[in-house]
Image 1 (tube, rainbow, N blue to C red):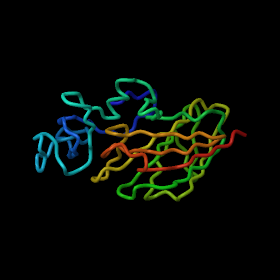
Image 2: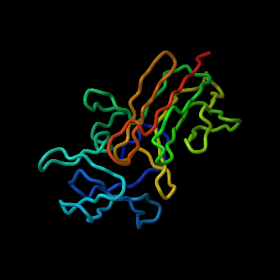
Image 3: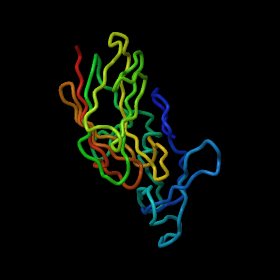
Image 4: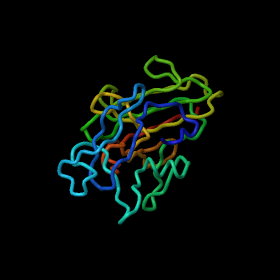
Length: 217
C-alpha cells in the first residue's frame, strides 16, 4: 500500500494485482475480516487468460514481459508525495502552504459515475466546517454543497494542511490511494485548481476537478 507520508489514515483497499494485461480487473470484497476489497480476474472475454473486461481497475501494460505499473506502485516505489508522469507532476497528497486561517472549496466538475470526494486534514489545529469541528473531513460530490467554507480554529498552531482525493466504491465503502489515483495541481496565488484521477480504470484526471482558495489573515 502507499506509504502514509505522515498523513492521517484513510480507509483504503488491500489490493492484489493478479494479471498482466491492459484490460480491467474486478474488485470483490475480501474474505478476510477488516480488510478492503481485492482485485480478482474475470476470464470472460479476456484473450490473455488473466484479466477481465468487467469492472474497474485497468492496469497499464509496460511492454512485452514487463511488470505492471499502477500509480499506486509508482508512489510506493518512489516513497515521495509526487511522481512525474509524461513530464507532469502527479501528487498523492498535496500540502497547502501556510499560513492559512480560512478557505473555500468549490467542486468544478466530476465524472458523474460514482461519488468523488476531497479529504482535508490538519495537524496542530482543528478545522471547522459547517459548525462541525475536527482534525479531518471528507467532502463528497453527492452530499456536499458546490461550495464549502472552512476555518482553522487556531491558525497560529497550524502545522500542516493537506488535501487528497478519495472516492466511493460500488458497495459504498470509501477508497483512496489505490489503483491509478493521483492529482495534477495548478497553483496560483493563495489558490489551487486540482484535477483528480480516482483509482478505478485508466488514469483520468477528469474524474474530479475542484478549486481551493484560502486566506492568510
